[in-house]
Amino acid sequence: MRVLRRGDVGPDVAEIRSMLTALDLLAPANGSGSFDTAMEQAVRAFQQRRGLITDGIVGPSTYRALRGSTYHLGSRPLAYLISAPTHGDDVFTLQERLTELGFDAGRPDGVFGPQTERALRAFQREYGLVVDGICGAATVRSLRQLSPRARGGRPVFLREQEQVRKAGPRLRGKRIVIDPGHGGKDTGIVVPGLRESDVAWDLARRLEGRMKATGMEALISRGPEHSPTEAERAAFANEAGADLFLSLHSDQNRSPYAQGVASFHFGTGNGTTSTVGELLAGFIQRELAARTGMLDCRAHPKTWEILRMTRCPAVRVEIGYLTNPDDRRRLADPAFRDVVAEGILIAVKRLYLLGEGDQPTGTFTFADVLAYELAKAE
Image (cartoon, rainbow, N blue to C red; front, side):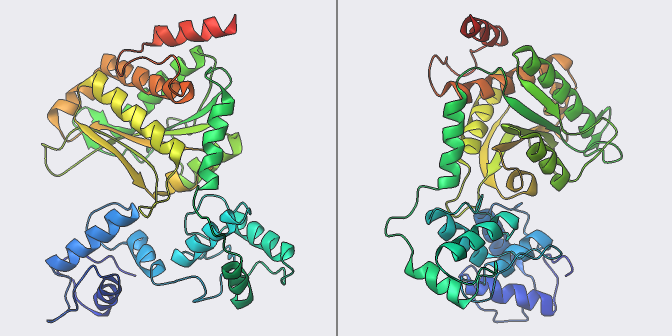
């Protein structure tokens, strides 16, 4: 479908209008049915609710989420299709039901993938159904009959928390994938004297050096002249068996007054969130805001591919706005990048400390981390 924005008209707009109306985000059209200001605000509200980029424009991701919101479990057969993966709220419900019943469908993300199919087949086998990996009427009926009385707990994310607890407070041996945004021909944001891809690469190398000094296994997701897709970056982390995934970016805005640092973790906007990802995003956010003095733009849940497709907890950090003169000046300073790298390392250390032997935000230093690691090794 074509990208839709304010001012557009036609049957595509009418379709989006009907879906927003069904979600009680928009009143029924009483005029021409064009993409007006009210519709733009309704799109923004939906995007905010679903963890999408809140721009008021209906592109492929927003359309897919809107279309998916019209489905409920049982309204259509569900199966794993390699060429055209099935998306929707019905898939999300299926994943949650299977997980609650003890079948590992992976991270509930509304995408019917191979792990969801394996969990579904296991459920069908366990309960004497036809083992075809298709969620049809009989399977839906059994899922509803067997729905547990007590629900919740988010087993997938509880496993994340348990893995962090078992990993212990030391950093040695932890495997972290550092993902500098863009790369190669994809330079990202370009302003006089700075390219986002170069800033991200330099930050990644500084962070890599500090992590290796603590005994961590730090892997960078791309080379200086390469720009993998988000799916390829996530696959790199998954194949490496990463414990954490950190994606480094800088932001831009039409307004030169937009500034600050923001962090993002996986979250659907309807209650499902990566608990460890959210915790790490919060640590990174507070450390960088305290150490740099940058405006704190907080941590937010998103369903971006880079957060959704990684099997380990993942955080994307937007470090400053290159379109803001003050942020740009700071990011151009190598000493400032050292401060950012140290802040992110300290945030990772805080995650594994789980509150034991911690220090106030902004006061823990790289030297403290090295001393801690040395003391624990003796």
